[in-house]
Image (cartoon, helix red, strand yellow):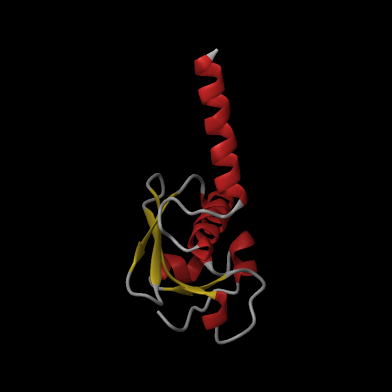
Length: 120
């Protein structure tokens, strides 16, 4: 019975944390949003990708996604939407860094992310 109560309390605690947007990794919410959306969209267009982000400085993060089957690596600079030079309808703004990222910006669902391909 104690084990069941412990598990139940853990589930409630995790649910409460998620409801409060607690970010266990220390990443801003917009980074998690970018990672999930870009990963999903790239998977839709190119097949399964693995994405990881890293902090460059207080204002800039980089998101890298890799599709090993097709030997593609997509690199993006990620900023909060309030830093975008134009209006975006999501919490993040992306700039394509490498050629694969620039090409992906015009493909399938990725084109809806309004990726800046001139900056990187």
